[in-house]
Image (cartoon, rainbow, N blue to C red; front, side):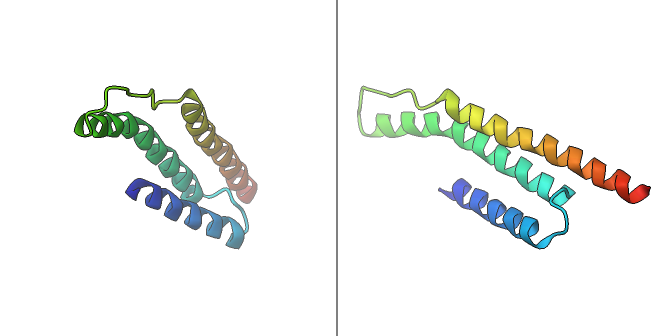
Length: 98
């Protein structure tokens, strides 16, 4: 739950920057998107461990497979957005130089 709170804070800051800024292609926004994807990866990795520990504490024998490939795909898509933002940042930077 704590990691989800951090993710929501980053998303809030990201949307504030996108709404208030002249361009969404800033290094701050790129770092927010990367942080969100890293935290999602941590959640995906911690979930099976937490489920295993809870099942052992509750003496359950049936353990579901908590890692879904769709979750990993979602994180890769979010991380891929950073490349789009980095490309836009480089375009903005080169436009300012000219």
